[in-house]
Length: 487
Image 1 (tube, rainbow, N blue to C red):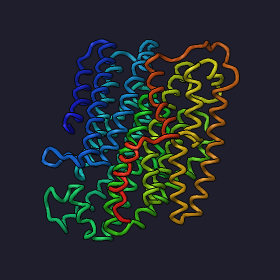
Image 2 (tube, rainbow, N blue to C red):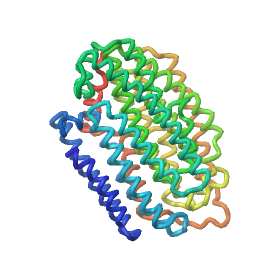
Image 3 (tube, rainbow, N blue to C red):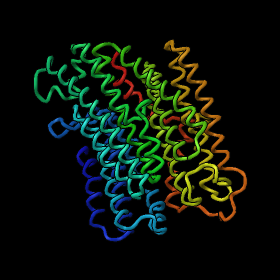
Image 4 (cartoon, helix red, strand yellow):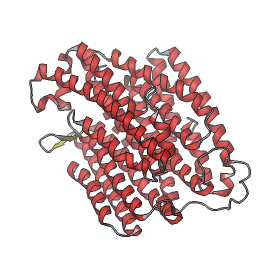
């Protein structure tokens, strides 16, 4: 099943190469994403029923943590494929792209999905290769319109993330060196299962140094401050489907990599060291994101800084630790992915309607776009932690964990920052959504495909704020048991 999961997006990309018409490309893309979702959900169910699955001489595996990442990736990937049909179809119709660039976009989109799935099922320190692949395959999604600003943002993304991944490689090598001293040379010194089994025998000093490099390296890709500078430029220049992929899927892969090493480091030196670093970077991300959100003038950059904020909250949850903190962090990863994807879809609809990503020229969206407008308001309320939406519940869980673990001052500061961000962020949404549309803007919305993709994700945004299905809760608890190795 794991091999099929990886094979489907690769085959989809290859079939998109030979497709000759817009309809063929769109059909192949949607069929491929649907198949990925079905196989992904089947694999997730198998893992949570029967436990860890390994294949290909144990080079590939799927445990509960892997399955959780696969669930997020396959769901968001399917929604983006639906949205692509309407959004990119409009771009092609308006002459913003041609058929060749549409084909290129679909090819690299599905290759990027392949690389994100590979991150979850890589059963060794070769995770580094998969995360680097996510950078290489997502870069063309930023540069697709070939504008000077887009090319500049793409190079910035590649250079900064490549520097980060190089630092992560050094941390990976140090971890391997620590493992070799215990396990000896060979494939066993690379396997996650083997590493965690003997991590308490690793050299503590070596593992501390390794984790610092891992956190800074992969933290660059996750958008942690101060390594976040690529993120606003990349989001503001990428087409909205690419932004949703980066924010809803790719940065989760970096967080996944950090937490895999956090588990090993905690077993080797105790959880205080890596947890303290996660709390520090998480808090810095919130502090720095706050003024940029308040003063923002571009709605796609606004959403980018919001991603910096929420990855900081995820880091805080894992840093606070305990069952409650880890559960909240994992739930927040899912909630952020679905909510932020809805908002980037809305941002794409708005850009195509109003011809700008600036906030000031946009007004009256609720009147001019009767479906996108309400979903923008709903997404804005949800992403800022308002009840009764999913992010409110996951943020509340993380804050409760912080207070229970004794981080009173930090948790109070986080609560204050979240309240400030709510006021600043929703002020922008209010200005865009309400009042009267500018002259020349007619009433009309995006395509049914684009709106359908948004509505699918809105169901999760609303439902997870009032009801968490027991199966989903049990799934997260299995991941909590993996992460919470040192109690």
